[in-house]
Length: 485
Image 1 (cartoon, rainbow, N blue to C red):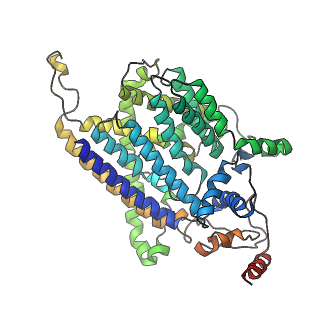
Image 2: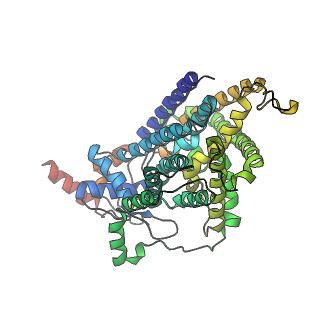
Image 3: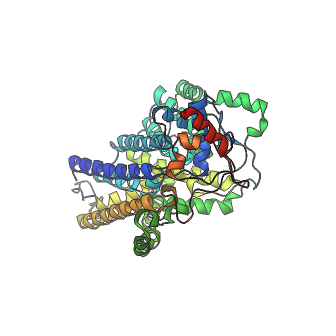
């Protein structure tokens, strides 16, 4: 495949994925985690109040730093709607793909670049998490930035590459604690010689990314309860509970296999009850039968990669090795670092905690299918007779191309199903994201939340976002009436 033909197909995939993601942004709903994030942004935009800590963590305490207040508050200055911060999520995904594609373009062949576009950009796990507001959804950008800046420093350290690498790590940690997976990967990459570091650039990046932490440190001194505290589990618990789950999700990320609410389809709100009944079995077959079957592809790809590269990957990386060898080693070293973190984790791994490694989980499929589809090279006179072919015969290229096209078509269908049927993209139906709230706030009207999908308010036993001031519906209505007069 020529570079020009591959480029056209890559940007065709990009256009299709961008349209699907934009559809999801337009249909995105607001659940409990979204209210916590929007409350920080709304307080900053509407009342000038900067919340110095992020969402509550599952292990206790609050995420350090006020980066989430900035990520949600600044977009509201431009568009006063609850979907404004979600557009930033989509922008992060676009930047992630552009950075990733530009970084690996000199390393991958033209058809492998197309494979990356299909399995990364059209992958259901990227599509789903590009269209609604949630902390892990931002992390795709930092995963791509991690690879690009590490690849740029495989032979020589650079100030700006180190600056971006370490700033990205610290900002990602403030957004979601799962960024620890990238921190461990960077440490192992540096130890094995895959990554050179510019000390001044790294220090400058850490200092720049620590600015949102200054107000948080001040508030922690006043209220130590803001610090995260592990309430359950023990060090090493993840060897039994997290490592097997993490390995399974590493295989599911490049596949069509969905998890959690992603596959809880209910199309009655969008198309009516009759259409929902007709679409049930096709959607079930696509996400369950085809989805679980598709795990065979990344399984075979990872076995192929590990068998050929595991010994070389964990050795000291030679500086004169080509970029392709570095990229394969990056995948295996990153997976090894993640396995160590998950084995030591005191809590159970959840599927969204590995999204920051989505780019690395996709690459084994790209390498394997790229090898199967590669046209044979002419034999060199110096090569022994038994080693004349460096790649499989050309007859494998057509089945691989057909299979990739089928995957892309199924991914688009799954994306459409999620956009119209999953709970995060519809108001009513199974497992809705809306539940009773015990109070009211002007934020619900200001950001169009009640217009999009009304919440039950003033329910005494209901829930409430952790930083949003509580008011009664009568008080909010009286204030709205006073403003209107």
